[in-house]
Image (cartoon, rainbow, N blue to C red; front, top):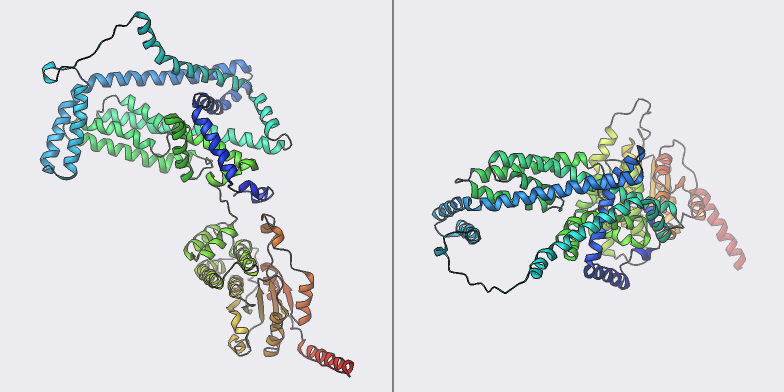
Length: 635
């Protein structure tokens, strides 16, 4: 879970999207686009450095000198890349030579589709597409000159120097870029420690712990992603290559290697890698069997890889949300083309890691990260405010997988209601919103009834005593507002989990004409629930009315207070001050048997067997004495 305490310590302005900040981001993107010849090789070199650093470190631990370790790792890595490129080029040349043999099968497929579709519908459009592809293949192949119109070509006189330039210049740019990447990777690996120190001095020399954690996190996430993705792609590509060879698809090695490379492209890489073999399956076989087998091969390998291999190997996530991966792919492709698409995920991982540790870049973590950016109680409050009982219940059930019901209410649900109370006090929560919020909160409590019953009926542990609430009858009543009623329902459900017979009642039952509907004759305790940190005296005087109606009843007051663990994670902790001791003393002076501020304290106080306080007569005597004093003073 996201470290909310660390986040809350930073100024809130770091998270705001302001016009200058947007202008800065747009300016940086424009510079990266215009100077991609500079930044793209550096980005490639940086990511390769991240991937090779663990190997260099492993060799260093075995006593290999730094220069030998770096040169050895770089030599092996780029030699493998060069071998991969040579094999793919050779396979592409072989495929070009075999193109004429595919035309007959393509024409047979076209005739079969036209006969099936009758010239209409999907079959006709598919046959037209195949015909067009076949025409392109035919135009690219040498054949009978009478079959095609004579082409006229204007030939300009060229000298040896022009021929040399035409041959050499197209090769200079990729060769120079590759050489530059190799040199940069070597020096980055050689000077890793110096680069780390310079980055710390530049970004966070005053907070070395955070900056060091940033560098370790970035290196670990990117290296893990690249290496595990390479392993997954290899596991994916081997059965694809072998399967295509068994099916009879030409150049199976090429398609296996191409699959290994294309799967670095998020989401669409597998689709792209399957497109070429599927087309060849149509061309190499006179029937449709090769196409069906090829499609089944890719589907089976994709399902196994996605559901078995990737969950097993990906012990740690990249830290990006699925939508962020897609958006990042679009953005980096726009900036740097196909290479940007391949690099999009690791580059975005670096941005998210920066945002997770440095306040200046926190915007990227909020927009692109996969961690929740809202505290659970804020997220629940938003669902309640929107009237979305389904999503509120869904998230509650997720939290209850790791927490007890009482803990969820204390740390998430009650803080959400306290935030609603704060909005109500500030006048930003309308009556309609309050009603909807209270109804959804009550629906949430109702939906969690099976969870409460499961906890109540769970067999006790060996050392656990009998349920503390067994034999008690408790009534929970909302103090003044509808959201108080929701908190009373939550308290009653937790009392039920502890074995008590508990019911909740709305605040309207406190009216003198409706007190009888509470059915307090057999009750042991009644708890008034207030979300207002300073309930009015008029609301607290219900304590005396209840004691007069049921002298045998213990009456307590629960003034909900924001838990310390939640309070420390809020940007505006001062909005929720602790309950004033004067208010607690006032509640007790009015006649309450107990006054508490938390769920645990309420559960403990409700299950105490003791006689209720007798305060009604004393209160009336005190009131008469005060009246006599006022009369004498006036006379």
